[in-house]
Length: 515
Image (cartoon, rainbow, N blue to C red; front, side):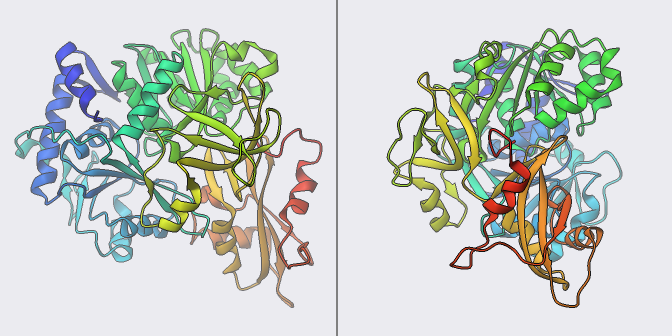
């Protein structure tokens, strides 16, 4: 199968059905497919060949939807750029996977000169915003208007659909290679496991469309004939307004978004009765927030998805029915039908039920590997099993419970942050002698990036100094939200920093060291 296959079915089943809603723009299926075919033709005329990467650096929009389809229609590979990254991180990702055609919008057009300097391979930039096209860029709309539609290349199967960058254990982002088979296996398997979206519903995109969680929901929406209701970025006001105005039936949200929505005073007066299904994931949700969410969204049924980018992204699902069982409130569900899930020890042998080990996953949804990183691929993929780096256990009924992270990673507001990335940035500060970065509990973000710093002799620095310095090197969401200064870091006999000792002070009393 191929990602664009759903377009052909939609065109046959209902060409006049509304495909996308973005602000005042509404486009039918027929209009959307025509634009996608023309855009694909334009990409080919720009020199995009089979398997070439096309970057998308933009806020959510109907054009983002078109690009996610037009790039494979042109036989190429999407590279959705993390809009929260620093310019240096974005440039690295473009250079790393050889992305030489990039689409930007109004929000990120100003970064193009810096990106060209950091990624000299970037030869063509297409402007997909609503303002005037900046000098040195091509107009997205003019390209569509001037180009004839081309046939769908029907790129699919084990061919790459996209390269999705995530944090790296070595301090540099790494590109996760996902095939069409992987993405569609995850989407269809999730849909078969439980009714995660309404067929023919109104699907809200408030989570960032570069994120694989939203792309996964987008894929399921395409398979079920959804109308995509798109807001540029998440704010409680814009999200609530979209739900009310367009009678949204389905939404993909991360727990931080859910908390902001239920805490918004506007939610009390909004007619949210249309919302029937909420799919959430990226991090666990507190029982308090879930209880409030079920009150505010009284007609909605909640499904939790656990997984990771490398799994395209779903491994387990906690269904709406499961949410009614108090014993399962801390579980992330059972394996979706497309996934094999097991808990393994250090020898990769499956452990008995109830024993804590590493969560490993196998199936056709598993990544092809990391772009140009054979050693990291081999370390993560062993005998076909993706080793998640998450610690947990499985009960007798197959429900998985997360308890900790084996890899040095923090999940804050639904985004993965590898501690080494932050440590590398903090360590560049001239006043810092040593640093260790850990995740600590946070009411608003689930986990907070926390830096423990030892200053060099005779040096001084404040928390604000450390944060501002890091801002030049890493994305805002990776910045330490708190900084602790110590005279020395705890170390083992071998000289390794004992992060578990640093974490213990903050997680003491919690039933699991993960939020």
